[in-house]
Length: 105
Picture 1: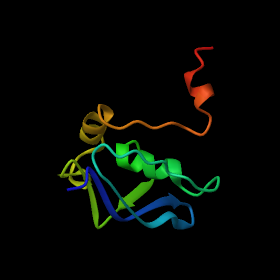
Picture 2: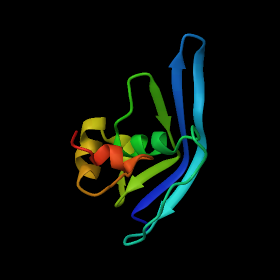
Picture 3: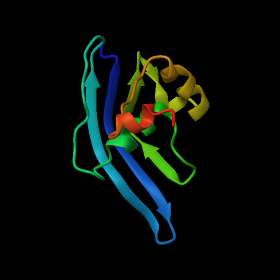
């Protein structure tokens, strides 16, 4: 059983012109103990995917997926607060400029 199992994740933003698709049907699995990096062009949706998994999406986001499970828990059935609590102790994210994230000044 995978630790993280995502099928057809789609992230859309509500704009004045309607819904805009930012991430379209992304699927991935991650086994326990496995280390992966999410690589892509600037603006390709890497950070959006990580934020959707962690539940830090904004009110104008629509996040849908056929499946989004972490440790066999359905993330889509949890509130964003519950999801942040669950993954906050188990998921790490390194941003594109990790040194600026760790700089105390």
